Length: 212
Ligand SMILES: Cc1cc2nc3c(=O)[nH]c(=O)nc-3n(C[C@H](O)[C@H](O)[C@H](O)COP(=O)(O)O)c2cc1C
Image 1 (cartoon, protein in one colour):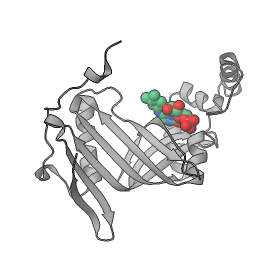
Image 2 (cartoon, rainbow, N blue to C red; image 1 turned 90 degrees about the horizontal axis):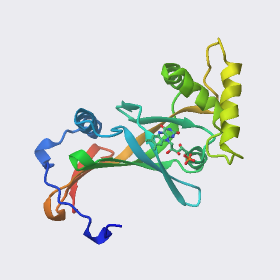
Image 3 (spheres, helix red, strand yellow; image 1 turned 90 degrees about the vertical axis):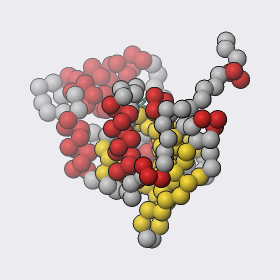
Image 4 (tube, helix red, strand yellow; image 1 turned 120 degrees about the vertical axis):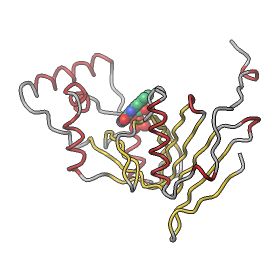
């Protein structure tokens, strides 16, 4: 195996200057995500979602960003999953995006709440039939006896909804993370990276530079 101490690279692609900033960090985020999509990064809308339980014990996993709204970041999942249980106990969550091809990272902190049911219905409607059935078949985060148990559930739901419109399961839907902090990180040479943080205050977004 390679010596991990020797694995490092310098970041020289881009800079993040105060003149590159926009007053609204959601607009800047949209611009960065567009760039990540245009340079064909792998899974540009994948983000790490960190949650914590009522005692502050953390847990994180990747989910897909499905909508950017002026007020926050929307993702979809199972409302009975581990993440959902933690969100119900502790609404404070964090997101992390990394786009290696652009040497960029975005960190987000905020509170998470469910989106209205009509919006979950709207997105569920757009999903391919197999994904809809998958949402019915998977008791996400629960222990299951075997792979074949899961595959049998898929067969059962496929036949249950054969020839009819597949409705959204009540335990599946969207959440929105409403940020109070967004940090834009641009890799720079010699570990002197650019870090710009937007903090939400009573007067609006306050912008400051952080040491790398
Ligand atoms: C690239 C990628 C995208 C994913 N997107 C989602 C997603 O949008 N929603 C989701 O519930 N799980 C998604 N997953 C699976 C989650 O990482 C995780 O395994 C699942 O949500 C269960 O997490 P939990 O037990 O902490 O609730 C994705 C995984 C990967 C690797």
